Length: 147
Image 1: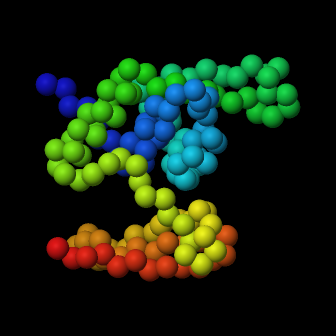
Image 2 (image 1 turned 90 degrees about the vertical axis):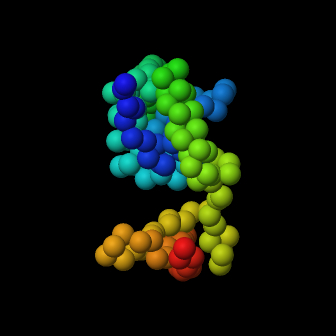
């Protein structure tokens, strides 16, 4: 039996974003929509093309009008199927109530431009995270509950 490649949470978020209808999907738009860093996003998109989860089409240079041509992406049946398998696995594990991640915002200036950084110990246990605002620099430490 063929085991599908492991899928990460950022990959699931990108696949979920690609399922939205009536939208032209391209790298920079997906970065803005998901908050995933460009270096990570473009690795994910290349991997998805290699696995057949997306197909791409270059924008006509006449339409681009002086800017770099966009590479428009469309999720394939295989991509939708892989997303559903991953969501089903998480549901069986009871890991998610719903897939929509809670948006993070700065508690000082209310900007959505924040990064979350997690910290753990040498055994790999997750101890706490920080939400760092890219706009005002505010840092909020978030403790995790140890089970």
